Length: 249
Image (cartoon, rainbow, N blue to C red; front, side, top):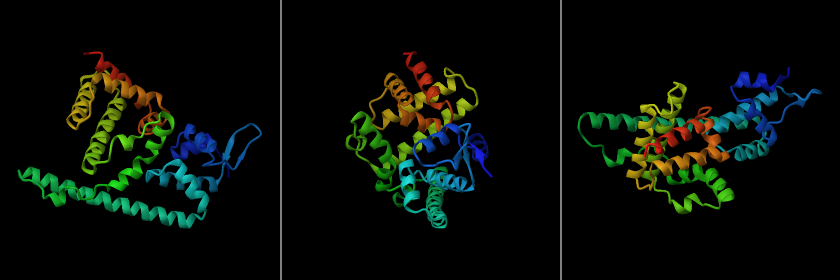
């Protein structure tokens, strides 16, 4: 049985735009194209899409996934490798949860955690370098800017920044989902608190420069897609909200 792009999107929750992009870059080719021009997919293509989504869950770039699937086409081996990678991530998340539990316990008792326990489960410096590689390659190729050269990785700082960034974006995505206006007090407070965090951690940033940064996210394909993959409309919502914030100066 063959399925159209629309049917595949409904089944997998992968957007039609994403499926078209996967076809364009040769990552997921349709089984055939009908006389009317419709892309049609079969079970083999669905299995490959599942493999792609597993690797995306593990933060592999599309280029890396394509390379893996082309070099190692055996499904059973790929699934076994993916299970091992997911198991490793799950164990790390369990260690992070344990670290959070100890932090909560120490804080509730008015104590301080042991230094040896404070950073268990966080990514290593090399893991941060690997995770940032795709973004850094994009910035070097398109803007001749080396993010890692200009901002050396400091492990504790990167972990703290990642937690803050995720918390901020999750909160903004939730505000968008709940239909809050960009000038809503809650939205504006989120931005102010995020800017304050960045400033406190050595970034030279204010409302105006943050608004400029969000406009860059909106116009740059890599960063816009990164935000849109989290929540449709998030890139535009963030940019307009930040501009609203800057206009109150």
